[in-house]
Image (cartoon, rainbow, N blue to C red; front, side):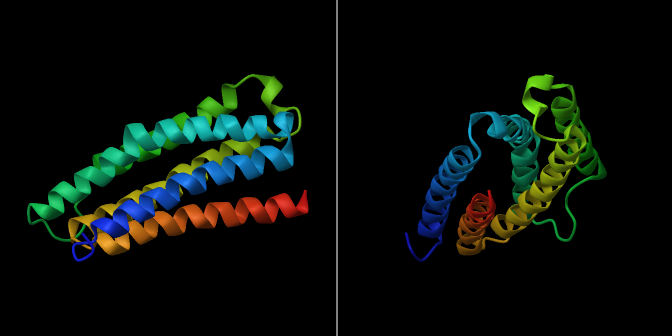
Length: 161
C-alpha cells in the first residue's frame, strides 16, 4: 500500500476531512452563530460547486491523461463550465436572505465566492494532473496541505477576533 501512493491518498483524505471539521469548528466557535452565518452560505455554495463541477473536471483530466493525452487536456467548455459555476455561486450568495448579511458586506462575500471557486478549479485541475500522471503521493499530500492551510487561516483569523 505504501509503494503505490495509496496510503498517502488515504492519509491525505483523512487529514483533509478532519481539517474541514476543524475549520468549521474554529470559525463557528470564534465568530459565533450570527457572524458565522455568511460563511455557512459560502460553504454551501462552494460545496455544491465542488461536487457538481470541480470533481468531474478533476476526473475528466485524470481519465484523459491515463488514456494517453498530453498537455492541456481540459476543453474550453470545461473552463466555461467553471466560470458559470463561479457565477452561480456568486448569485447564490447574492440572493441569500438579508438575515445572513447583517454583519458582513454582501459584495465582499460574492467576490469571495467567485475567488474560492476559481481557486479550487486550479486545485482540482492540479490534482487531476497529479493523479493522471500517477503521482499519487503528491495527490494525497496536496489534499492534506490545502486543508491544513485553511485551518491555519481560520486559526489566524480566530486569534484576531
